[in-house]
Image (cartoon, rainbow, N blue to C red; front, top):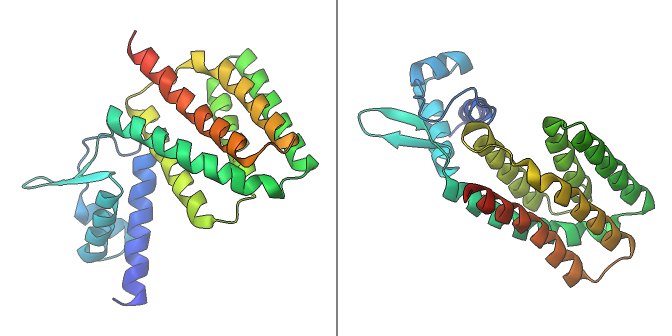
Length: 217
């Protein structure tokens, strides 16, 4: 495969993936090869290769006699992604902790205080953005870039779920910022690795517990 062909396939992949994740393409929508090929300036082959990658990402499903369809991410994917993130984020946190100084921890306090203010204003969109900023401010100190890439992709998958089928449940928000305070305290006192990892992992699993309670109502 030539470099030019690889680049066209990658470009098609990035275009399609972005549109799926930001909600431009809704679940169940058909992907028209001719249209995408024309937009990215390629033949059908790079687009088909991009679609195969998106199938592996569980973002697209190929149906006989229909073609490529944007996959509707279901409840199981949401729950499994949270479970996966609990493990990945727990490990990323302990990998980051040794490289964080007082200024870094103070940055976390500032972000969490902004989260508290956005919660007071009932600005849930800002709260959600700050929540991501809080966690990635920690992970920015992790040297394992493949691990961080996996976390980023999992967060994007959750964003797709939230945008398509599952509403944000605000009752979880006050507990989340309290848990952030506890994470900050653990980082400040340089808590044992096992304690920090376990708490961070449980922090993510608490979101899953809150979701399941909300679904049961």
